[in-house]
View 1 (cartoon, rainbow, N blue to C red):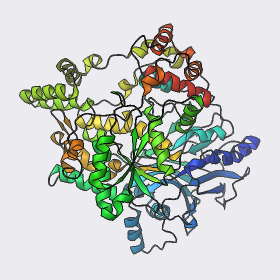
View 2 (cartoon, one colour; view 1 turned 30 degrees about the horizontal axis):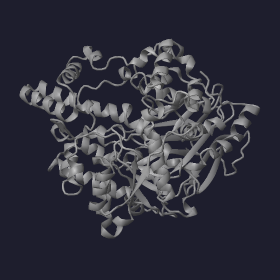
View 3 (cartoon, rainbow, N blue to C red; view 1 turned 60 degrees about the vertical axis):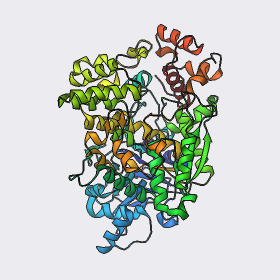
View 4 (spheres, rainbow, N blue to C red; view 1 turned 30 degrees about the vertical axis):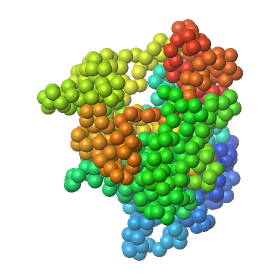
Length: 639
């Protein structure tokens, strides 16, 4: 787990070329938190010759830098950028390849001889042999750069769901830069940040980001998950990237045996591979089904001797409310049953400007909930206790229908099959368990069966009248209306996995963990588990108010029944409303709202003022404005 950087001066000339190359050193230092254990450089000339001197000069046509967080093979043998023994290829790689042990054995049987125990060397040898085709063999998370000194070509690739970040900045005049975090570009010559108006509008209106390749910084994009890109370097090489897809989520071709057993086997195998590390591994743990299942699998794999050394960390509010329930009693049941060692982590109160600005700086972009502050506190405590790898449950809800949005598609499936009595019984049960009225469910059903009435289900939020949309985007529209359409369970899962949910969650988790030099792993997003879950029939995912049915079956006897049978969806939350409402004179709000004031309508300014005084119902638009204001000032972003 590390951080990477590449600077390609391209057609830049003279002093501009030299300044860009020289500024690369500072850009790599910006992410020292991602790799405190080692760093390295490889600079490539137009003829393909290589230097490891980080300074560079006008003869440099590609500079690649690396910061290392040592997880596999802690020795200097894992240093990057890493050179292939034959000299043609170099690699800089952020992430982990969990099945590197199996791949190493295969390569050794074919005659390869290794000089390290690192997964990086396995990846380098495999890519050198098979090229892009090697990517489909990997079980891991990664953003990688492979340099071919003969063809003078840079290959970039990102794991199937974009667990590890990879950003692209196209400089206004010339040159390209690639990085693990957007803030790295701020140290490069020529950086002058401006907001992408459409993305900024999307965030203020709905709180979404990472739903497209574009970021909130104009000119900065990300390589989509499951994609690769190539670009040449050297005299006369065009700066244009050639982008292709290497991965499309699939399903298992055969469904053999009980669905619960298939899910258990897939999750168990994923957790087993992701426990591999040469450092201490722990896990996030809430009172929910997903993280509890991961901890149960991990402790079963580790056995009675290893389970007590497996540390878990749980966010716990100082004062439990409906908004921030205390899940510690459920967690204690899990700890007693599995033998894991648990630590409650107090959710911090919303601090002052400096604390919020620090988290925003690490996140690169504003975030839609103060729950991100709670998550940051969990990773800080894990780092304090010497845990360098953390497992977490991201991705299960999106595959196994854990969100309420999936009920409408399950209901529509019953109606299309004319199972009307079952459909009515399901609606009654959802009303009882999820507190969703029959009228609401019928409107949602109508939106699926007749998309033209979708506005009944998703009316324009009040914030649409509070934002001066034309000042941000010429044609401001609801970002949810621009996502790939969801028509059934599978397409809804794909929408959530690739656009609406998982990309944001992975972004927040990566930045919060790496801010304290901790690696976060997500077993539910392994290729095997995703293929298994997407192949499940609807009745093994959601029915009559029950979600994630196959996972609940899989965990029978392995986790507490109170967790396994709990139908209430509890979000990872923080006391947001209590922190913001009623402190209208607070320094944080006063300062944060100044940069966004010009983007609000008169109605919007009045609504925020009334919210702050507690005179009207709280809307998370207030938090989004606060966080956006901190972002604009902290990164000196122009509008």
